[in-house]
Image (cartoon, rainbow, N blue to C red):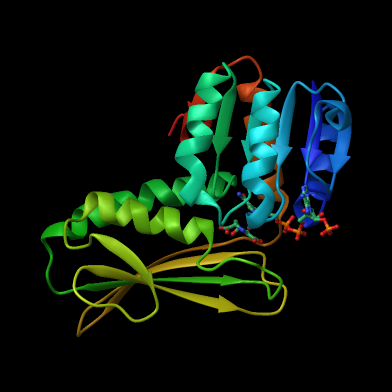
Length: 233
Ligand SMILES: NC(=O)C1=CN([C@@H]2O[C@H](COP(=O)(O)OP(=O)(O)OC[C@H]3O[C@@H](n4cnc5c(N)ncnc54)[C@H](OP(=O)(O)O)[C@@H]3O)[C@@H](O)[C@H]2O)C=CC1
Ligand SMILES: O=C(O)C1=N[C@H](C(=O)O)C[C@H](O)C1
């Protein structure tokens, strides 16, 4: 399969290695807005760039009818518009806040625990995410997905908020530390104990492999998808 990489930083470079090891041809490595010319006729685009350019990048690919796998976080207020563009252009789009198998299993576990907690009043809930100091957005896309999983399964919460909260808001604490690849925890605290579920990425390889697997999966599909469709979760 021919893959174009849009965004060629920490993630783009690892995706390049893994895609080639899996037998794919990387036909473009872009650090600029994609066009019909510089994309070089790929089967699929994998987009890991910056929050402020992701929308224009994805739009340009979909308008050229090229399916897009997007891992860029921090631009989701425009996701509905992109999903409409995918349908209008008879193309395909998949956004994942986190492409690793472990985090997608963690999402399912988090939703189950949130459902168990909906009738238990003794416990308060908080999220924490820890990432490297270069990260541009906060909270992380993964933390937002975890928060949405709790809000959808536990009516005690109706929104998430960074740090201090009031009413039915769920608090997310974002920590920036050294070169941490990504650690996410959900805490349920009572007066007598604490339940914690935690995912720790040791490196970026799991994110990159998941993005390539998603690209292989989406190749001949049309419409809008999520990583749970790829993994059957
Ligand atoms: N979903 C997931 O599983 C994961 C998501 N992420 C997310 O992916 C994104 C990228 O992460 P990461 O690789 O670590 O970030 P980097 O900052 O290392 O890389 C970003 C890249 O985008 C390039 N760039 C700048 N402008 C454009 C443009 N207009 N079009 C295309 N590319 C451009 C940058 O080039 P230059 O260096 O020249 O500025 C750089 O190569 C982030 O939003 C991050 O949160 C990260 C890990 C996993
Ligand atoms: O910026 C990163 O590095 C990461 N970003 C994603 C996010 O915002 O959740 C995924 C992963 O945690 C690493």
